[in-house]
Image (cartoon, rainbow, N blue to C red; front, side, top):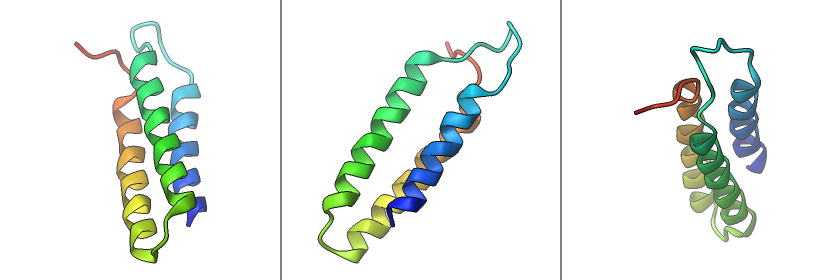
Length: 76
């Protein structure tokens, strides 16, 4: 269901908006890539022909949502 993927995307967006210290800047490039990945997942889910395909995409959306934990700081 697209709502599951949308919910995972929303959690990432909310994590990006949280207040942060100067020593904890947002990695804008990682956020951009992650949101693009969600857009790709949503587009594929919208045209998926089989329930199993949608379930796989939901799992992918959930996995992408876990990256929100790594979003706070610039890496490298």
